Image (cartoon, rainbow, N blue to C red; front, top):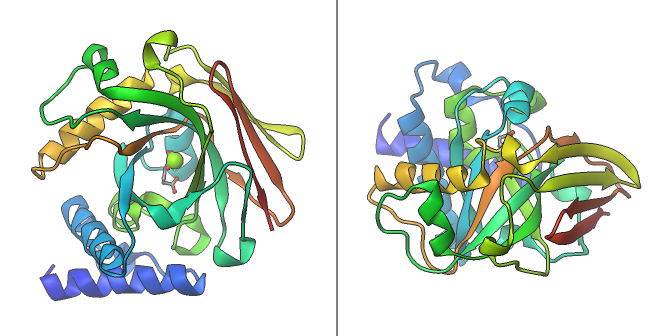
Amino acid sequence: MTQEEIVQAAERLADAARNATAVEMLTISTPGLSVEDGYRIQRASIARRLGRGETLVGMKMGLTSRAKMEQVGVFEPIYGHLTDVMRCQNNGIIARSDHIHPRVEPEIAFVISRDIDRPIQANEAIGYIDGVTAALEIIDSRYRDFQFALADVVADNASSARFVLGETLTRPHRLNLEQITMLMTINGAVMGQGVSSAILGNPLESLVALVSALAEQGEVVKAGQIVLAGATTAAVHLNPGDHVCLDAEGLGVTEFSVS
Ligand code: OOG
Ligand code: MG
């Protein structure tokens, strides 16, 4: 794709998000769209957002659990960018009307303590993490019927819409990161129940994969950034009035409501 086509695709997705109206997936008009071009579109759309005054606050991994891969039929982990505008305070309110067909999913988030400027293994990753918290991610594919191929979802910044972090940061060495049980309820009903090992065997592996994918672009995960490791269970549709609560063992409770 030419740079002009990349920017056009980024604008199309940005308009879809702004108007909360779904668009046709890019691979229909561009069947050969590569994952590489998908990431070029993602970066062009993030550059636009940063140009409008948003700040980059972190990164997210997606499709890092079997349940998530099966739900969307894409079997490759991906990453996306998180900006300050996507962050919602714990116990805050998310407007249903700002979104097309929002879904929520239970996640683990890391706050990075120092730049990760070299390849790492999972057992070293802990040395780069200030704290761990329970997170809820609100995803909202800009594509019709929440359907896409790998390159489409990459271009669409991995469906990122909003995220909510818990208020307490727990030191990683105090946790068994493979064994955190996670319970997501909506209006009191259990909607997702899982263990953190569902995320690539250990959510630290998700950070390792992110570091290595960014290294291909000459980029690094930076001190102070938030990293979402990916959902343990399938995402659940959100409706106006919903109250969503995630209780992750040892990490506390994260919650929000939908207006
Ligand atoms: C893609 C984003 C996946 C996760 O945690 O697996 C994701 C999607 O499901 O639309 O954020
Ligand atoms: Mg997610």
